[in-house]
Amino acid sequence: MGEGVEGLAPGDHVVPIFTGECEKCVYCKSDKTNLCGTYRVDPFKTTMVHDNGTRFSVVDRQSGVRQPVFHFLNTSTFTEYTVLDAACAVKISPKAPLEKMCLLSCGITTGGQINNQLTSSSSTSMLH
Ligand SMILES: [Zn+2]
Image 1 (cartoon, rainbow, N blue to C red):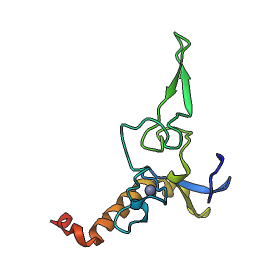
Image 2: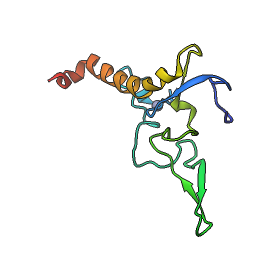
Image 3: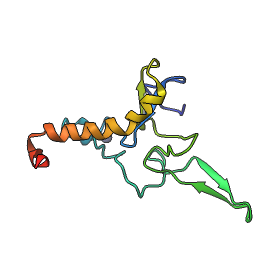
Image 4: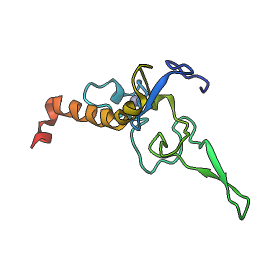
């Protein structure tokens, strides 16, 4: 657990979400979207939001040069281990089965956005 992380504790069960929420920006405070201005998906962003850094690296076998393993979609979950910003981790019940909760990571984020759009009075054209 990194310094300054609030609302989470070691041992908590979480699911990673690629659309994190800072809870402070105008988008996070809106009831019409969950696309945070800070943690929204940017497939071209290759570092962590917090410090624009990476957390892992590899050493090239031939040259011996250490090179960063870049971050992807705020979560980098195509791996056994990852490091992500706390804004991209959602605490879940420890009783929830992890093998099923992992599927909610993408589905709830996407579904929440669609639900928000469909309930917004200014976005009825999405139904056409
Ligand atoms: Zn935000």
